[in-house]
Amino acid sequence: MNLVHAGKRPLIRCQECDELFVVPDAPDKTTVKCARCGAVLYKRNTRSIANAFIFNLTALILLLLANSFPFLSMSIEGSVQTSKLISGALAVYRQGMWEVGLLVLLVMIVVPLAKILTNLYVLAPLHFGRRAPFAEQAARLVELISPWSMAEVFLLGVLVTCVKLADLGTIKVGVALFCFVAMIVAMAAGDAANEPREVWERLERSRPQPLPDPRERKRLLSCHVCHLVCRVDPHTEDESAFCPRCGATLHQRKPDSLNRTWALVIAAAILYIPANVYPVMTVVSFGKPFVNTILGGVQELISSGMWPLAVLVFFASITVPMLKLVGLIFLLISIHRRSRWRPADRTRLYRIIDAVGRWSMVDIFVLAITAALVQMGSIATIVPGVGAMAFASVVVLTIFAAMSFDPRLIWDAAGANRD
Image (cartoon, rainbow, N blue to C red):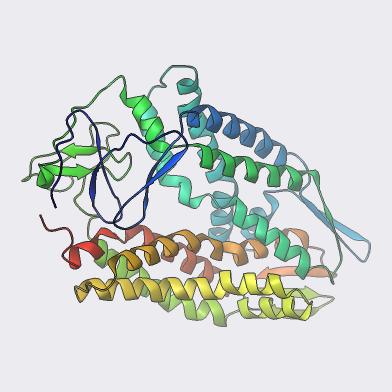
């Protein structure tokens, strides 16, 4: 590829196909995409920091309110059970599945709270023209934990739970649920407004880095965190070079990407069988047990006439994990075979796999919410099943597998990244 000398204009490298570009002079409110694979390189928004700060501050207030008031309450035969946002995680923990309870607590409350607080720690000083100590490390933390923030998936779990328990008793919505919904909207608006490149450029102003020459392609590495294109010694080994802007370790490619992805995919595929065979939970009502598997939950929704919700849950809980496994296996095999077939389409497939995997957590959230609401002794009780542990493991392993996979290997195998 012929590259034009950048002069004093910065470079950017696509994280999905490794194409190198001179950063264009894009107008405000513009999305810049890779010309080769279609990945979003960055968004230009001059007010991104101010808007993101306001939305994150709003989200923090709403999250605190959501944890302070009743979330849901359920009445069965005159017995009333009230739950708070944290009650689901605690209920699963008390039933002996502390691993699942801890996972629910992390992705539903701890990670969203940590993400909001860390964003505010970085954005608030920048909004007022200052720079927080260790701001680069905080910004790196946001990148690391963002995929594990699943508040919106939990909201889908609330909807599914309300439909499933409608025949068992009367459910009332608490103030906390409205605050939680508003928090999700505020977080989504904050994510949409926040442009990481703008944040990193503001942080870098006090520590300007020399611009690399694009003709030195072999010596240019792109930081996977802040996307700074760095000039390094071509003989430098992995794990020994660090980004001068954020401090992250620099790699040509994700270390041992194929082997790690294979290991995680195989482990998830093995656990996918017990996750669908064994019960996720058992409802004991007046001494009579009702076993629920993942597919059984979908059948319940169909029986209730909730076809749209049944299709949504079937897609999220059964189809998505299976398609993630099949899709990743296909991508891995295509790389091993050094396939040249449609690398851009295979990169888009990876992008979809990476985006939808978190929605499979909906069944685990349904278990947690139901366990919190239905603990009424002999009247009705929820007992988590071994299938819940297996399914939660499948979701976590497939998310890690997608993170471990390096889509640039698709282009390497196709011979598109040869100098």
